[in-house]
Length: 272
Image 1: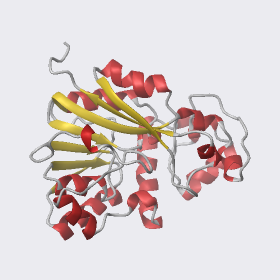
Image 2 (image 1 turned 135 degrees about the vertical axis):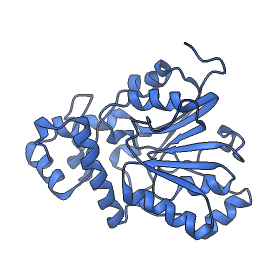
Image 3 (image 1 turned 135 degrees about the horizontal axis):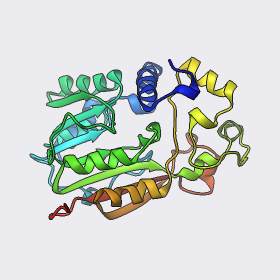
Image 4 (image 1 turned 120 degrees about the vertical axis):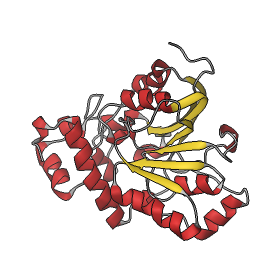
């Protein structure tokens, strides 16, 4: 592994791949596959999926799923992809972590679902041709990418005219605080934005993070998160905010929502 000062985006991708495989072994909430009852309910039209920690995405945001081509982007873990497949979609799950993709295959095999799994970086969808999908479903995960704008550009490229992208992401204000102090219930402003674990963590804390294999995180401004979608060519149609489950979040959750979900569409007449 390169030293922190030498880390390139490709080094971050490689490190976070191993780190999320470790999260699977540790039983992280977002690595736990859905059960058979959830899939059975989805087949009967009773279903919901998350872009953010607790608030289900309104079903009115979705197109007709039967026969739709759906890319679950950075969305491994055996959760959203299998549910959408049970609703009749043709699902491809792309994720950076092999162990996360294995979760989707476990559910697919257990429930008789067809799901394609692709190992890859959310910012590089070069394995897909233009206008391949009707829906890109991108749960909160781009905080693990050093730059979010390529994610939006690639999602726009692989969507068909009229296609939909749903995305979840964290409010960047969270990253101005000392996160270790927050865990102790102390709210201390510490960092300038944009924040990077690689550049802004104290050397001893970064060394600890690298040693134990915790995923590296990066903040992205609202200009990059929302403005970046618009700059890529999307039209924003809906937005909501969300909080963590009680006991899972940090003290900020008592004062403000810390997650955002957006729905955006590709214009029927794409610009040149």
